[in-house]
Figure 1: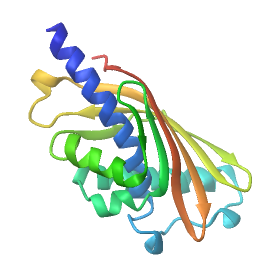
Figure 2: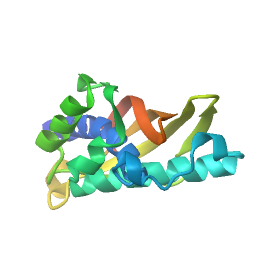
Figure 3: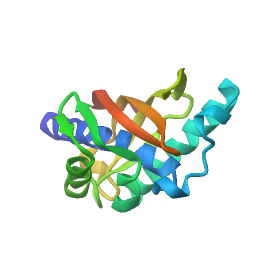
Length: 177
């Protein structure tokens, strides 16, 4: 039992990193030219920033959960840095996307823990998104269990698009019941 939980936690950690990255893509509709989130200079309040980044997170993880890799990849800068407490460092969106394809697609889905999202403005740059997410193994939760982890996404608004430049995914563990 302990080994199953440990495997599940390890997989959730890898998935958490990928999920964090994917969340960003979903918000922007997956393509830089198709983003519906307002530009940074048009956001005038914390409420507007919260709404924008929450939408980005939803779009990113929609593409993650559906394994829409083209859309997913569009949420990241080419030289994204992804730091995972159990999976190590992944550099570049091509490597990140390949990792999601290999380890996530058809195996894991991500859910944002309600009430856990916190968003902070980064003047002249974008926003910092911090939250908690859970990872499920559809059809295998009786053997894999649900994992949970915390994440930080650094969003940059540049050249007309919101993209993630850095991801930190950490504190991966089995989710409490």
